[in-house]
Image (cartoon, rainbow, N blue to C red; front, side):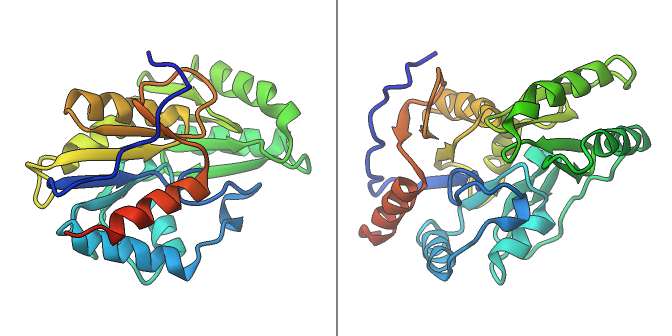
Length: 251
């Protein structure tokens, strides 16, 4: 694994690129509640311009649902892998493959909500994924991790626990960003291009691994520990500056 003191990413030249973007902590600053983030109109314009410049080969790869992404970036409806790849929209404005909430995950979510009621913890129900956000109550992160790890013993096989910077998620083993990116790379207009992926959290590491294997460019935002990414950008403002520079370069 690489060290956190990584160089900044190079500018993208005239080569055919496919660009994959995490959202929270990468394009948008984190908020205590997922619905509290703010998308400036200029970011929508930048993404639309980059999508056009890349011949459509730009997609979100996020832990949010595709529906939540569309609410944030409306009227844009870009290709997107939601719920870490459990949901997909392979073309702009196209149909979305969705994922429902199993009964056992719903029951666990009810238990977690009851335990943390009134304690500044947000429990997010994302179909087969349960996310516990502790950004507003960081002292409750260890208990959150304990709860979902204990739940693994009584859930059907095929789930894993993924701790993050400010919370923890319980998700199916198939929810992997690397696999989500790989699926895009098998279809037009992404296929045959060199991939680039920007992300900021533990859940993005599988994406970095896939990008590295494909000879692409992997970029971690605000790295604080070891990472598979080969480049780094210090913060969200740096990401937007870098993306803006790519958009301004000659096609």
